[in-house]
Structure formats: structure tokens, C-alpha cells
Image 1 (cartoon, rainbow, N blue to C red):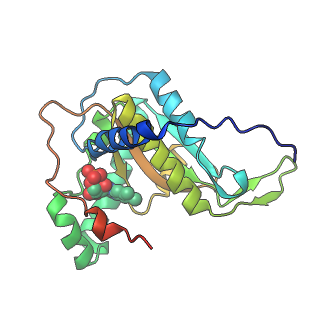
Image 2 (tube, rainbow, N blue to C red):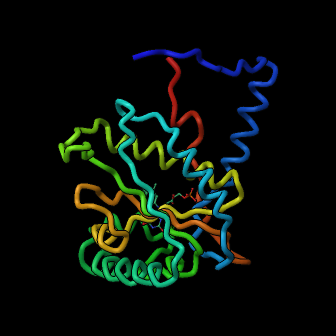
Length: 218
Ligand SMILES: Cc1cc2nc3c(=O)[nH]c(=O)nc-3n(C[C@H](O)[C@H](O)[C@H](O)COP(=O)(O)O)c2cc1C
């Protein structure tokens, strides 16, 4: 493998804290939005954010992901109908009481109007293996971790560009393969709802654990 020079940007120490603090302030403003406007989003912004997702570190650089972008209203409607069907079973039968209790403060239920109202849905698919040029199977490594990190990059990129997102995981999600026409070897990982918040949108009052609870310095 040939190597190339690393173009590392050395940030003066005096600026590092400012940059870290500014990023924290920006990321603290991100919230999962469940009330969307139908205002269309700029395609170029989506494309740049998806390219940012594609820069994520990942197992052996095999980049085991695919992002399926849906803006067609009829496809969004099909996704909403299939998701609500799964969600009704989830809320009425499948979800253990403890899970329902954990969801209760968020006020979520089987109705998912945002899947139709929001201008864009991004299906994130994980590839446990790839398919080589001769149809051979190529094993992928750390697929969950890699796709999770790429999705985090995508959410952060969309947020910093000025768009709202909801990380949505209708369970099970196999219907996304059918509707988004993805091959059987890909696994639907999650559905990212993207757009602008509805006017007067509200979000659940929640808090994040303080630094001392989520870290230890040794
Ligand atoms: C993997 C994952 C799955 C999620 N699934 C859903 C979902 O199906 N429906 C939903 O309304 N929110 C879902 N969420 C959003 C969480 O409820 C939300 O991130 C959490 O309550 C914290 O709120 P915040 O994103 O506004 O900080 C999911 C988040 C993650 C990371």
C-alpha cells in the first residue's frame, strides 16, 4: 500500500478550546424532531452531508453502508403505511412493558405522520458483506460500529447545515429493503427523517447526563 503525506491542520492551542466549545454549543442545539414542515430541502446540502457520512472511519475501509434518499411523495407514503403497521404491532403486542415505560416520557406512538410530511427520508443500510466483481462475497468488519459512526457524522452534518433530523427505527425494518429496492444482503439500519421543523414544533423536555456521569479520567 503506498502512502501519502497527511495534511493535518495544526490548530493553535489558544483556538482549540474555542473550537471545542463552539462545536459543543452547536451540537447541544440538536434535537430529535418529530414535527416537520413540508418545505423542500436543498439537494446539494443533502449530498454534502452524505459525503461527510462517507468520510467516517470504518472497519478495514470497506465502507459497509448505503444511504437511500427518498423524496418522492408516493414512496414516502408507502414507507409511512408500512412503518405504522409495524409500529401498531410493536406498541400493542411486541414491546415489553419496560420498553413502553421508557418511551412514555417521549410521548411517541404508532402514528408517524412525519414520514409523509418531511421532505426527505434517508434509509441507512448496513452491508454485513459486500459483493465482489465476480459475484463473490467480501466479508465486512465492525459493520454495526462503522455504520453507527457514519450515521453520527450524517446527523451532525445535517444539523450544522441547518436541517433537523429524527433517527427512526421502526421494528422490524425489512420492509425498507422492498420499498427502497435494496438487495437482500443489506440490512436496514435506521431511517433518518430530514427536513425543517414545523412552525411551533415542540420536543420532549429531557436532559443529558453531566460529564462526571459519562466519563472517567484515569
Ligand atoms: C438508534 C436510535 C433509534 C431511535 N429510534 C427512534 C424511533 O424509532 N422513534 C423516535 O421517535 N425516536 C427514536 N430515536 C430518537 C431518540 O428517542 C432520541 O434521540 C432521544 O430521546 C434523545 O433525544 P434527542 O435526540 O432530542 O437528544 C432513536 C434514536 C436512536 C439513536
